[in-house]
Image (cartoon, rainbow, N blue to C red; front, side, top):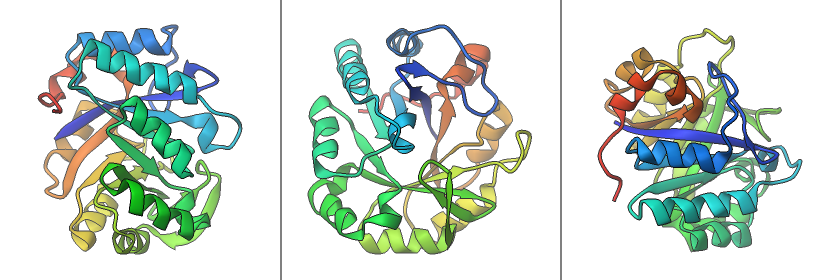
Length: 237
């Protein structure tokens, strides 16, 4: 099971998600701390870009450079606002291992085809869903589509990797592992899951699902419960 500590970046700061609390560490300080604990995989989410309210592109570039300077074998996934070839090329040039696309799956099929043609080996397609119902534009809009139907559409585009972001109905709701399993079973593609994975128990359950390749966990949770570090997988590359 591959575990990706995830930095959610908004206005230049790391912001907490479900189950986490705010910390005073600057993004680069947090990254250095995580790498010092042996983290070999990271996920970066540009929250501002996902909501079309700005971006943290230069900060992400600095984080990517810092990661590879400190640990050349670290693999970093970038998500949030990757909606053009120029944006994708920027992150690839800075050393991103994977790029996540989401909103354009619903709004720009031609751009999706263009990105797959140029960047297929870097791409991960995101399915953001609550109770199996797909949401887009930073979870703001409902897409009128079920997660499994979108997964099949994504496979048809030529994506080789899926990210299922489970949007909980309530803060203490159990993760929707059934939808994650359905997506994997119906597409035969490797699936990552994030959004609602916040405890060691969730990680242990996720590890029992044969189609689930990895999970994304808010990086701030690793500061609050260092037992989560025990679940980190070996070096990425």
